[in-house]
Amino acid sequence: MFVPTRTAGAPDVVAIQIGRRPDGVRVGIAFSSLAALRAASGPRQDWVRMDERELRGLLVQLGVQVIQLDAALIGPDVGATTPELVGSHDR
Image (cartoon, rainbow, N blue to C red; front, side, top):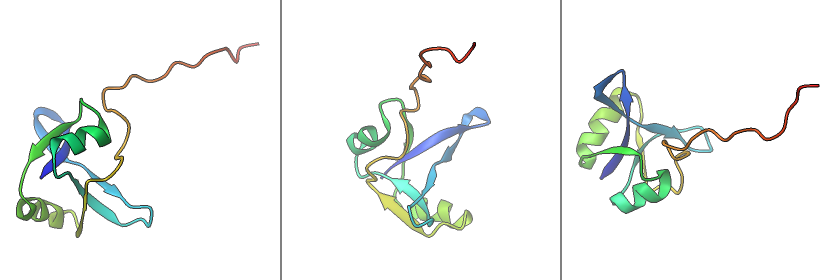
């Protein structure tokens, strides 16, 4: 599985990403292919490859029991710039 990660403090330390389903249940996030991960979160998303047993071992430490496989969207492109506001609110 391809598991999205983010930098956690130091450049050489990463954390797996977790999310929430609409019903509030916390889930581990994983993808069956790199293409599926890129389609959901963009080309700049960092990732690590691991098998299900390894991922479940990490998730159980966080109290997470569910793995969401091939989610359609996990968030904005991590490299996207913040949009600029057009116009002015100054009077």
